[in-house]
Image (cartoon, rainbow, N blue to C red):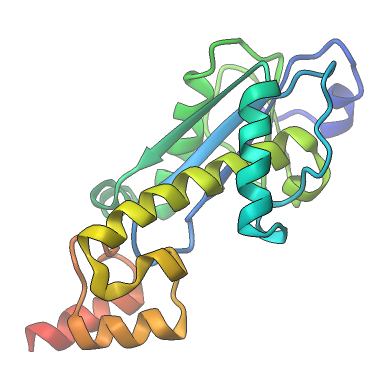
Length: 203
């Protein structure tokens, strides 16, 4: 069930879980989601949409979030399941799993964007919530930093694609390398650019 934003986040007693994803638009690698319940007694300075922060700032904040939050969790969905489910459903599943892994039950779940997984909790979807709601900003940072770590691991397995640089997104450099080497098993075969290069290399 979806509830309005303002009805719940203004109640200081509410236990609020913020949720966001990372990697939804990438051509390679898993999609990640994080859920964070911040401790209102220990506000964290500098929280923002992870895309607006430098890698160093994200890393520094991720450590602080893990130390100061009541609890946090991360979930990921692999490339095979992304291709089978489609990226929207895979993202929603990652979000749902992240919430279910929380060690403290939230009163309300605030999710970045305009779509929500099916949860037993009160839920509010907030467009650009990662820039305006601290708990969602924290989830954005955790999801991004944890996914970046995984993309670095995948870079060591598939160094020719330079996944450590573009993190699987469809940059000009990544497209050039895809064209040269063809997709690996960590590329999302249901995504149009990857499909094109599969056909080229099969032909």
